[in-house]
Image 1 (cartoon, rainbow, N blue to C red):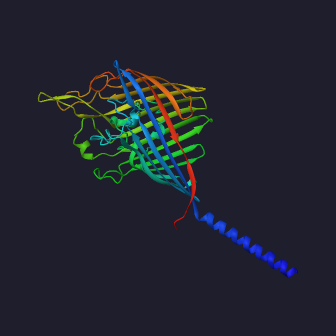
Image 2 (image 1 turned 180 degrees about the horizontal axis):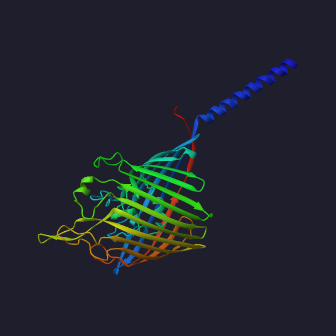
Image 3 (image 1 turned 60 degrees about the vertical axis):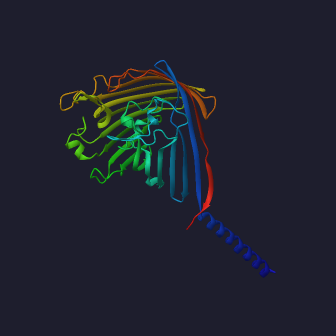
Length: 398
């Protein structure tokens, strides 16, 4: 009787242990898959120069995929800009898709879909995150603190230099970039290099770094530096007006943020890192050469939320240094008074969590490089944000 009881108990224990072993094996043979599609659809009416125009406002769709295993997460991200309807003008600097620096590259400007982001990477938790591809730069870790307006942000820094997305020189959505990010307590570090060209005799084409420090619960202080490399021949042979050295960028930011109030300021400076078009008269003909210049910028962003209403103020100042730039015959290619200066007032009404109305009014005191005054602009529009996260288990292939 005791032998039978012991035998039954032993068999039951062995069976139970076998089930546990199978369960453990199954757990170790699975990975967590996280898929997150999202979209942000934006459009508004703009009133300027006694004209009314319906405008697209940098709508986008995207997809993030994470595959999580023990100690490591592999991920990818892709984001496409969606041009839902046509417009002759656009006032959102973040909507720029063109690249290049001295030679503009804008093959996507008239397409329905245009690439904003595309990257792969892996996250080693306490050892940091490594990302490869087209992605937001470490320089934008700082300048992005004030690039929060619905329409008129980003004009007081060199993030979107020359009317581009900042991709070629690595200040905005950096092209072909390798970025390492890590955080230790309140301190966050970002390191970046670009490998996009074989024409400048450099092993890599730009490098940058950012440092962000949180303190006193609601405050953040940050700084960033970026240097890019152009072909030395352009500089040594003075082939481009105003180009005296390799492009360099500096930015310093301060932010206060709580549940209702958000305030941020960014001070920036660049050398040889932005360009515009000038005007020269050569052999009785008008030419429009590219002109590279230094500049100092300042941006401010303020936001206060009261229930479903949000009130916004903003300021963009960008002062190019073009007084000393001249052609070999002494002509000045850029007029005096060339600058960007915007005062912005705005509001949002959010009846729903993922959809809201917005309005912004820009009062501009700036002038283009040709002396044309910037528009005062009033906008009113709609923004709809959607996203969904799906999680499941998948088997390992090996």
